[in-house]
Length: 183
Image (tube, rainbow, N blue to C red; front, side, top):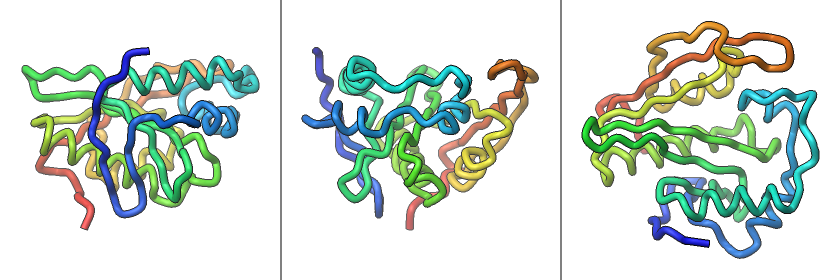
């Protein structure tokens, strides 16, 4: 497995870090929660128990991506956050976050993780813009992105089929000058 050196990024309550020994076990222990998978766009009726191979693949994907971090708080693995589709010429990228621990939802930890990564993207990488897509019914995620400074820029109608129902994707964007920084 190829590893990519990446900095540890710290907020007040969260740490964004590379994978550590034991993260496969930590990811496996979190399992797959149908309600969380639905917020990511998966069909909750099709969710299966996580396998050790799937937990290992999740860890390997983070370890080999220079722009992906484990989110940790109070020494607990909560999920991951990453930049993707990085375009250095246009100084932009997409951001994605996944909180996998149901006990961590609604506590502002995902919001803080996004703020920490956005500050890194703007201040260290030199990006000007971050974008994301979020399902329109995922009110918690939309609110978290808005607290970071993201604005809804558009809507892609019926872009996601979840089970038998179509849902819209909200297109959101954040400019470097709009980031609500940690104080």
